[in-house]
Image (tube, rainbow, N blue to C red):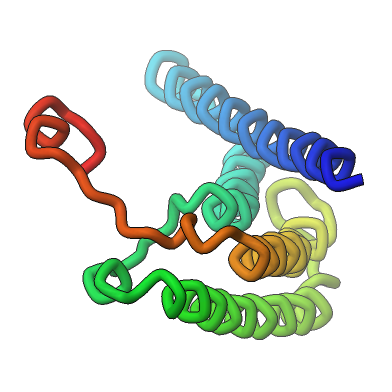
Length: 178
């Protein structure tokens, strides 16, 4: 049962990551296309410019949960690294409970914002703004789920997962993980 759950989680993560990667690739391609069209052919589209802006916001908000799951977020760990592993677990849990609260507030106000401004029609694409602003609460929900996954992972992890990481001097000099 546990391996089945891990496989499902890995597949969901792969889908989540793939959507973000495809959106980033599309964003890069469209930006390059619009720059070439503007500078070499003096042609631009307001619809495409607005779509690129929306896609940029999408990739930013979509990436919140991915950063949490991959530990690719900003962390100041000078004090955390010096804590005993048995205490480290609960500091990590508390840290992510605070993250969850911030994400919950973000999601709540994201829904309020979509409700207030979502009825307006965009000037470029001519669609209701709720489709553009809707990424905020959607990504907030996804990030909240990712935060809960991290909290469960901290609670259920073996204590060795919180052991200090030591680097040899040679690792640092040769481009190791320092």
